[in-house]
Image (cartoon, rainbow, N blue to C red; front, side, top):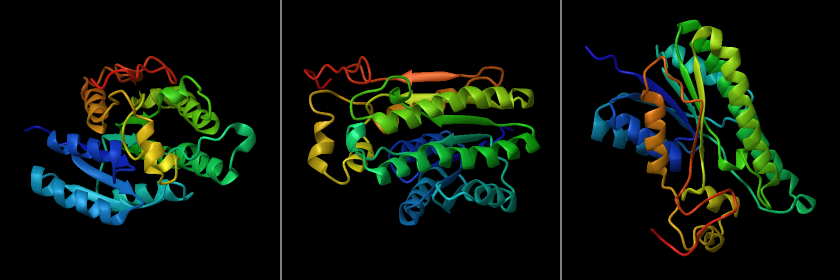
Length: 257
């Protein structure tokens, strides 16, 4: 009998998180999905249960809340769920101002979500994984965590932090056999740019002018690979880019293929 695995996905209501949920449900994994938008979670749960027949649990939460990790861990315990995998996907970019014109509220949102939220969740769930004796954690990083670009300042800093945290957590959790890795995408067409430009669709669309970006499904496919290598194998770091992107700021905008 094949053992059914369970993945936790934060920020699962859209974009990469939603695509990952579909990929893992299609692959016969049970899921625990968290996000701020309850209606979208409920809709996704209904779709996945209808299409794939897997057990889908949802939890409305904002990872920025200091007790978000403990709330999630308690939810898992009460539901008798032992997670095989945590995908720390919740994150965002807000604004693209140069540092001297930066909006402090934008900085706080990015730091609180991308760094502190990931820490709150990782602290609680890594402790639970140590307790249960197994686990795997994958962070969604970014090319922005490897190279900076104009206007990216604080967002790039948060993603550089994830790069460092991934390495440090892998050392901390090594004695317990818990794998830790990072998937770092380049330009991907999700709600990312729409959020960054605060709902300005024209500015968001311009980000992807003249080339074909990654899709959420492309990233979900890479996540699936990372999660399903043999247990003695760990993908420490995967950088995935559109063919038309060579670095954080260098694109070939002459092709849509």
